[in-house]
Length: 248
Image (cartoon, rainbow, N blue to C red; front, side):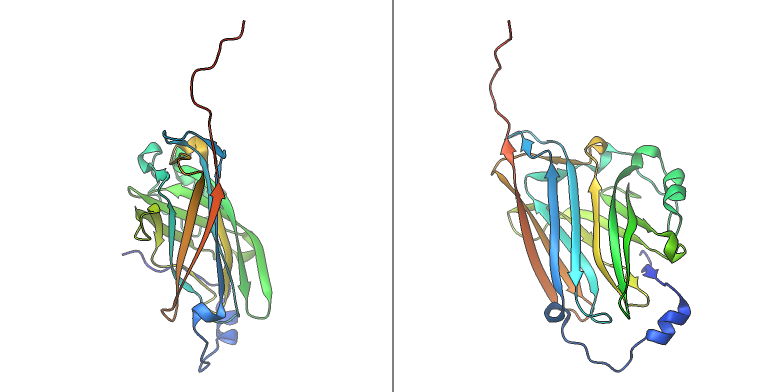
């Protein structure tokens, strides 16, 4: 099993700000969750799956400290599919390395995209613009979302995800399962946003526009076991079929 990654800003800060004996409200009641999903280009073939860019992300707002996301399950429209074997995998130990060092440790094409993350610490201290790097692997249908920010002295985690068959219903086909979401400052802080855009050139994500819209669903499970499910959707356009006349 993969050990739980923890974001420790400073041991002294965690000890000083740790809150004990406080009963928090249910995470699903206290927090506001949202999901981000976007495929580009928007104009796609009706029947054939073609490589696309996929932006996928989450946002969570709520009290800090409080109940935080413990597990994430992101489902993708059945007209989006994943092909992890399209890119090489990276099995190098990249946890807690800088972005440059992590990329240097992996096969060049195993780096499949990038994004940004934000965290909030007790007392209203916010770090925006944390760099997220997406790597294919280390195994089949697995993704590693590496994070780094020099302001945090390398104390940022790597998020481990696995592509699985979605259990969210017939509208969805694939899901990204993160069974052990990372903690922030001993779970006294919160990851408020996290996203990554997988590059079209990687060949990992393919899509088509069969129903003229693409759906995305997030099911988040908080520390206390309560759950929240949110959705979003994106319109897509179908490419014109048929043969084109030759220009004289």
